[in-house]
Each structure stands twice: as structure tokens, then as C-alpha cells.
Length: 422
Image 1 (cartoon, helix red, strand yellow):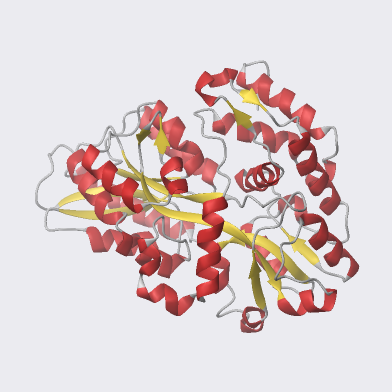
Image 2 (image 1 turned 90 degrees about the vertical axis):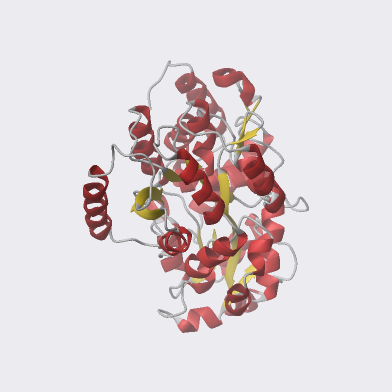
């Protein structure tokens, strides 16, 4: 979620690869390097890598692209080629099943699985599991909450101490010259929103995922219709930001910090996002449970995070397993959360002392409550195809209407069965 300068990442990549070439034929020994491919962040994973380096090995990080889909593509291409230079990977939850099903991930020892299952939130365990086996180690578990400007809520006369619906916040913003900031660009973040809306209305994108491409799609359903109605309402409302069709986590933060900032759904790191740049916004920053899709039915906030896996093609699997046990320890989850705002995958990680100094306790409680209620995206090796087809058929947001769910379901089905191409 946080920005990373690509030129620095590229330079680090060249330095690390050149160092690896000299040692690529050797087995693990004193002074070895373990290479950890990470998603971009504000330095949390690099600090954890430093913490977990030992006399036997040094963990060096390589930064993947910002976009989650591009992270998947880069890793999967190299793993398909059985590239031994990848030892450890930070993997976005939607792609865990795909990597495991393809045989890309080394098997986690049973004793480590037991430790991870015992310490992790159930949602994190579920996201890390495929075919009844934990295949990655839960590192951080993220969720979205509803951020709001306290001054705007007071002006609009909306009680944020009570659950609110999408309809209510859209109408409140429209009537009071405010904007509702979301993620609706043609990328994975848009599907995160769509999935949360459908789940909040009591549905799922797909079920029966054990049947492979013959899974049951449920986009064309009352829940899908409700999700489409919410997107259509916002997109055609004065509350829609001008950049809605290209909005992402970063642009949503910019809209929220502007003169018309009112409401925003976004990840946990937002609490510290305005500390240095807009302290006046930070003072005005309120938080509440993710909006309800249907009034009276509990919302299902998005679930995000990172699981750390070991490549099946690494020459140093044993050392990498030892490393991921350290990387995903509650203490290092806390270190990462302090630096990045990406919350721990364990309740013990929330006990890291620095977090209580950064976040008010009610917000830490809300994060954990939201994780308990969060809706993961469909766990299937075919998620990348499903997600790509949804992006194509639901974008742009101002084109969504009551015909979108049936059209989208048909397109997803055609893609899965090879009748259409993305």
C-alpha cells in the first residue's frame, strides 16, 4: 500500500543478483544468502529480514511490483521455470491456492504448521490453507474500515456511533458537498470492493471451488444485484470523486484529504497516513465499521494480508523454513506493523508495545473485530482468471447497472472454460 521508488528497487535487485551468482552452486553454509521477494512497503519487511538474519545466512529482500497482479505474474513465471534464486516469497492471499496447486511451494513442516495455526487469527489460517494444508505462514492480516472526517459527519448530522450503510454515506456526502473515496480502478482493489459488497449482502462470488473450473458462480444473484446497485448509485452521484474510474488506495487518500473529503474505505495504514503531510486531517480523522450493504445485516469488510511461502525450487529449503518461523513470529509481526501500518496476523502481535503508542485502543479493537468478520476472496487456483474477468465486466464503475451481474457471470464462465479471452 505504501509507495516504493522503483529505481531503488531495481538497483537493489542488480546488487543482490550479482551476489547470488557467486554462491548459486553451493549448498547452505555459513554466510549464505536467502532471497526474500517482498511486496512494496515502508521498510517493515527489510527490518524483519535484518532481525531474522543469522550467522548461517543473511536474508536479503527483493521488491516486487506495486500491483498485486504483477507480483503474481513475476513470481509465477520464475517459479514455472524452477528458478532456484527465489527462496522466500510474500504472497497475496488470492494467489496462495494457485501457487500451492501448481506445486510451487515447499511443504511446511507439521510442527511449524501447528505453531502458526495456534498463534494466527482464524481468517489468516483460512487464507493460508489449501487442500487442508497450511501452505504459507501468515505474516500480516489487513482489513478495511470506514474512515470519516469528524467535522463532515457532524455537519451532515450522521451518527457514526451506529452502524451505517453504503446508501446512507453516499446520500450524506451528496447532500453536503462531500466525496466518498473508494478503489474502483481496473485492478485487484476494485474486486476487493465488489467482493465485500456481495459478501455484505449475504452472497459469495463463487462456491464449490473443489470442482475447479466447474465451480458454482454466484455473481448473478440478489447479492450481486445489491453490489451493482451500490456501485451504480455512487458512480452516478455527486458524491463520486472525479477520478473514480482510476481510483486506488493512494488516490482515495488524496480525495479524503481534500476540501470535499467526507468518507473513505481503506486499509489500516491510513491512521498514520496524514501524520506528517496533513496534521489537520489527522485531527479530524474518525473511524467506524465498514459500511453495511444491506441495512441491518452486518458488513463483511475486505480481508487482505500477506502469507510468507518457501519456494519448492530453493536450494535452501530448511534454512528458509527456519527463517519464515522467525519472520512471522508475533514480535516481528509487531515490528512490521509499527513501520508499515499493516496489522499482525496474530492477536499476540497486537501486544507489541509500540502499537499501543501509535493507535488508540478502540481502533486496534476495531481492526481485530473487522478481521473476525472479514470476507476473503474466493479461494481457488483460478482466482486470477475470475478477478480479471470481473474487472473487465464491472469497469468502469459508471457503466455498472442491473445487467452487470448476469453479463459478468457469463463472461467469467466463458473465460474459465476457454470460450473467451481476457
